[in-house]
Image (spheres, rainbow, N blue to C red):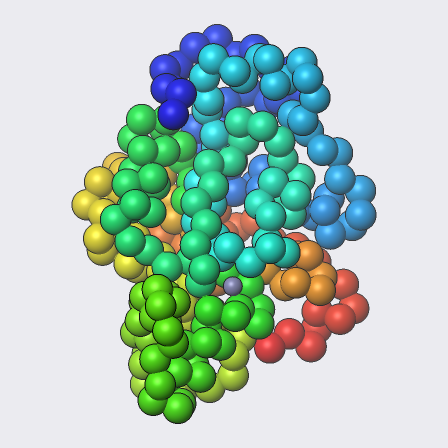
Length: 237
Ligand SMILES: [Zn+2]
């Protein structure tokens, strides 16, 4: 991977490097609003910008998202090359490679925001729910995905939550806790105020994201209003 040594900004249509978690969050929220409203700017996608970022990257957010094909990070946040450091697995499950990738972005590239991005009707969560209900394990390596989601299902049961999107919210929060619990490097960055971790849920039909949880709790990052979802959103699960 290209290194991330600080250097002069060679911006085209790119804003100065974002180093504050709250500003990085605001940038993501702005991009998502543009996407939802059908007025994306597609920033940082031209040939000039491609050349400008070829010798170094300064992404302002890490996205630890579900692999779902409808959750393409640069599209839903209306960003371009060099903006987002994206790690995606089915059900945004976390293993050593995910942790290492997040730590690379936070420590080497200085990325100030980590977003766990889940979504409604998540197939990985549904698969885990089905496996738990029937007592059958899926074949092959899919079992690893299901096994990683099961603790969130147990937590949902304990909390009396049984609708799929409520379980997804719990799984998003659980993933945030897993990242911080298993990565002392990330936890230290948060402790020192260099980074924040925010869990967000995306609505497939609407295209909007809303914050589910944030560390540090009450961080300025959550002061940014969630995206207005439009008429259908008021019936959110
Ligand atoms: Zn999913």
